[in-house]
Image (cartoon, rainbow, N blue to C red; front, side):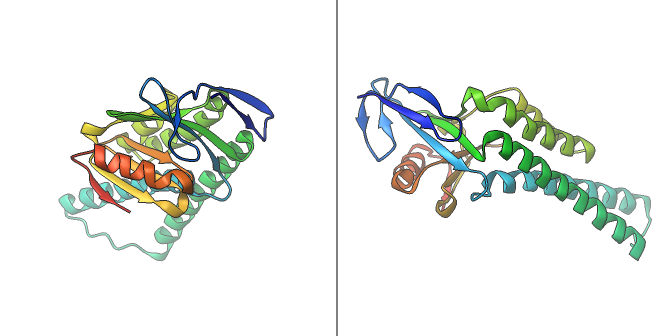
Length: 225
């Protein structure tokens, strides 16, 4: 059985290699042993990607504050923030939040407000694959994360951003997965290793199958959701 999936916002057709057994409404078990499905992510209604970027920003900001506090602590200085310094901190925080929201809006607009992704899942790993026509737009979020991490002096955050720029897929090997967290109302399953974080999306009709499959194939993972 062959299917062709139409991209509604672009009017483009994607060649669909799904020739195999349909296990749920949108998931196919292909002859090569891989489960495959497409997911169309509504970037206006689903805040998952925006939340991820804001978390990176928060980690960067927290790292800077902790670093400044430790320097003051070891130097023997007592930090007593006044109203002026607190006001500046609030302005800087608001500036970065507005920057994230503006950048996200631009990227979402370039996507046509939809993020379409292909997933491949087998007995050893799951892959989150950006479709080629969207990869160029996705690089903007990578640059944003890299710049935010670099500006805050956070090497880890900068590394995450540069990693987004250098690949069009995220692959999670089950033996390395430490945590699986499902958020069903946002159709997302977080599959996290040490520093590698992956997001797997699935519609309501497919969600339980994907969640159960991942939970049963990741022996070292803490599962929630």
